[in-house]
Amino acid sequence: MTPEDILQHNPNVVSQAQRKQYFQDGFLTIPDAIPAEWVERLRTLSEQFLDASRRFSVSDNVFDIGPNHSTETPHVRRLKALVDRHPDFWAFASDSPLTEIAADLLGPDVKFHSSKLNYKWPGGGEIVHWHQDITAWPHTNYSLVTLGVHLDDVGYEEGPLSCIPGSHNGELFVQRDEDYRWTGSISDNDMAGVDLDSAADMQGGPGTVTAIHCRTIHGSRANLTKRVRALPLFVFASADAFAWMPPPSPTSKTGEIVRGEAARFAHFDPRPCPVPPNWAIEGYNSIFAAQK
Image (cartoon, rainbow, N blue to C red; front, side, top):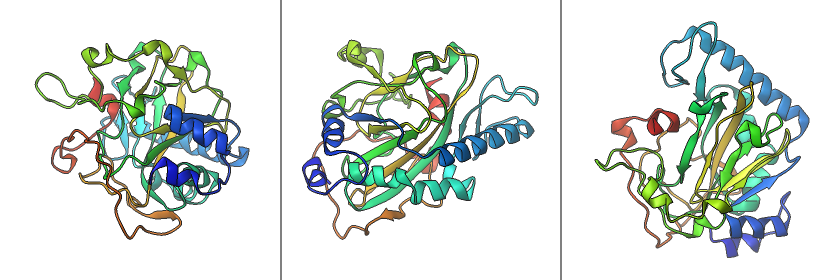
């Protein structure tokens, strides 16, 4: 759906002013959006899976294992395909205030795309370089949003997500190196033309939801604290947005309608999108592995 069409529908939990801000900036921070009971449940599950990772030594279809991982000191960068890891993750993605927020930003008919839980560990090695999401999983249009949920306080020192305002209306960059290998990040040459001084951090307390448009340039700095920052992320699409390449991180729920009805027609946005690798053939681990 187009922003103009979406704004014609009454919002559920996001105000009309906030929706307009989202479409203007390409991102939105919504404080106190998720009830404390859900936040605590998500935090508990996150800690349980982190503890379970001690039994593994290499990345697989569940864990993206970091270079410092050990039985004594786990180092997991990502819990993959989140909704397939525990029923409560899918319950949250399909029937919670999160889906109402998705509908406010995508229109009344919403489709689930993917999910993961990223762990940002202390230290300079946990930087996520500037990138745009949609070039990894292109669709017929750009009505997709990634919703993150803060499980704890996230301030400057925790290395919050940071976005470039208005970049969703600009160019989509080819996130590859000089040999055309996928990097999952925008090159320094391309970023030279981006106003980095305008970058805005997405800070907030537990229950804060971050919404990032699929074309928005974003990244995150190092975690300067001594604790890990866990961030579950859920991607939703308008029902009339259809993928035209295999998804990098498919789930058993990918493509399911979580609000409203399935689309009878596809919406095609004329703006071109770079073609990503064929993930069904090449495989995909995580953005952390790609950017290394």
